[in-house]
View 1 (spheres, rainbow, N blue to C red):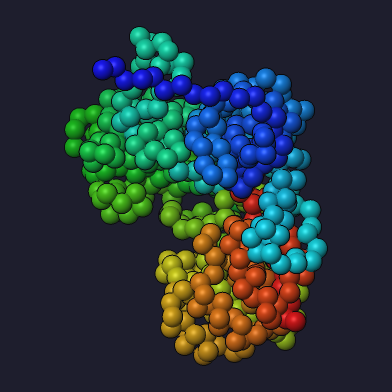
View 2: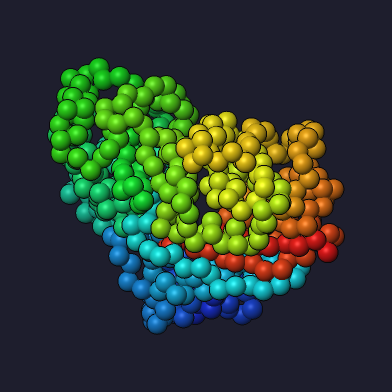
Length: 474
């Protein structure tokens, strides 16, 4: 018995808006339809992918009538790599919709008043703004539709250097040029790829845990115009091809790329994508420097640092403006990271205490405080989600202001309860996820009102938005 071929129902839709996570929304017969790769004002042809009780997921087939809000994507990989899902939307519209998503989060999820919703703070640069890119090698290259249609012409199927296809840990899109990374990065990608293919070096196979080349990381700074490259391999060079490649990377590469102040070969022999066994400094001391609002920061190979350096001064400046600190005041900076908020804020207050889970970040924060001759900032390594966290916080002087910058999951209930008990006059809640920010502000609403909210665009051409909320004690 032959299996019936599945028939997909086709529809014509007019796009009305953009929902959370950047997916376009259309309505037909009162039912919400989600459409990827479309923008408001588009007329598109789609087929039905999944039917749910309250909505339908669709698959984009054809753009029938383009919206005046549509932009021609600069990137040849748009729609495949998943990095810049809004490159097809004009930038003024991007920041408009980011603001709307913050409004929706407070109105629909938090269901609380939010005072004044300011206009989104646009990024000074919308291309080449990222100061860090992490590219992957893979033994299974993602094939484009054109390549699949012309299967006789497919080359290098078993080697790729680029970015992971969304939802696929084993498939990598071959990236020829990325328009949001530092400009030097595109020449770097081309040269490293060419040499790897020339020497016949194997790329990492995540499924079978074999292959030599794993990752290529680029980091850069604006204030000091410094660059760092980190090549990560699965082990030491053993085969003839591997030895030739590493010899090139250690001897010829530094000459070909004088722009890189730091050149590092790291080894990760584990299944964890983030573990590092060892590092060899080929050039430099493993440190590059950035400056935020007059404070210098050391950035080590794997330390966290905000990725849009062109926006950092405005972003951190706005947080400190919302905090409205006085010279006599005490401040808590919770989830402080490497001190990117703590150190500039320390100039405005009497004493500031930073708390962070990641030990390496706390170490960086202490070093950065020392570099900048700051003696009124004190740092603690602790898990803010632990039930015992009040024991540590109770040893600190009562704060006049608490600055909170949690991960995407938001603030744990244990900490929310303690913040309510402390009852500081002001809270500044910084978030990369407006949904959890609105949820947490609702939990604080018994004692705090949201006075104003500032959306900030740290990630042009993506749906991601940072949000700064000022809360005052009722």
